[in-house]
Amino acid sequence: MAIQARTEFAAALNQLASEKGVDVKVVIEAIEQAALAAFRKDLSLKGEEIPEDFESLTADINPSSGEISIMRDKTNITPPGFARIAAQTAKQVIMQRLNEAEKGAILDEYAQKVGTVISGTIQRQENNTYFVDLGRAEGVFPQSEQTRDEYYHAGQRLKFYIREIRDGRRGPEVVLSRSAPELVKGLFALEVPEIQTGSVVIKDIAREAGNRSKIAAISTTAGVDPVGSLVGQKGVRVITVMNELGEEKIDIIAYSEEPVRYIASALSPAKDVTVTVDEKTKVAKVQVPASQLSLAIGKGGQNVRLAAKLTGWKIDIEGLELEIQPEVGQPLIEVETPETVEEAVAEVVAEEVSKEVDKVMAEESVDGAVVEEPSTEEAKEAVAVAEEDMEKDSNKNQE
Image (cartoon, rainbow, N blue to C red):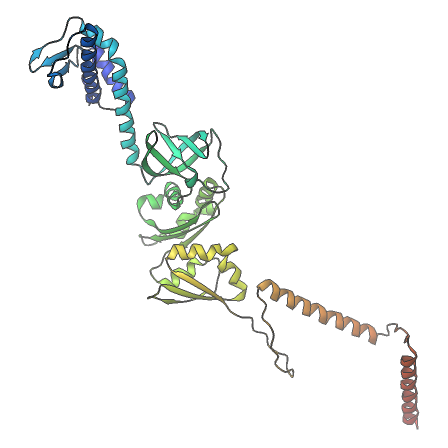
């Protein structure tokens, strides 16, 4: 609370309190404590004994004139010329007290911002830890909160999630994160007005920082599409968030209270998914067509892993075997099922190519393609016998 600035001293008090972001009372208390410290030092310099009741002495400052008095109960015991001495010796104490008060006020301010997203500029690097300028405070960005494959440099401006306020080697620290799933949630809150108004709520989020995230959203207002709200017109909202995250892929689905529907949606982009759940063990068995198996599992199992984190269910995926029907008149034979969709496609293509080659060769032989002469005596003899038989049959037909 500011005091009425009728004098230069009062104006200076108000300005100092404003610059430090603290109350004027805090500044006055710092000056009073500094005055007592200066009084003790003054007695020591003069060789006088420190009063036994020194701890009960108080300093009184006039907020309008700035006059400082040392009081014992109601008696003024201020030595002559003390104002000049106090001004010279108390400066360091006053600044120290004010810096402590300022830091405490800043930490109180950022303690209220824990769990929110804030912009900051990277200032410097010490080993694998970066220090970020947040405006009134400096944030700590440790390696454990950094995103893999992201590169940071001095002067770079990014958005961070305020993880916590913790005690560090230099006192309380504002810990920042770029890998927390809540960062994605906070970025969408900045871009989507429907989240700010409460008509759309992000229920669950699963993230592998730097690679992919899955978000489940629900609408609390009739007629509002939660997925469409997060995606935005022509994808402008989700693209903005992805750009901030370094092109991290984001899947957005509609939240559902029904586990079967929720799990099936969480496995997108896979389609035609059949889900059966066991409520007791929280295990979901999923069957997908062979053509969708790779999409459901994802590269390195990432898609099904994120789906399990998102839904809270253990997911077992089974691929449906390819059904190969025998041709009419041919016996049913056992055929080994290809392990992957790519192998199945390759086998089908190879079979079709083989059929086409046989067809072409047959057509060429019918059209009178040149046939090579037999290369062995046995083959020549066999050809001669066949020609002789054909000639006899021809003569019989003529008779």
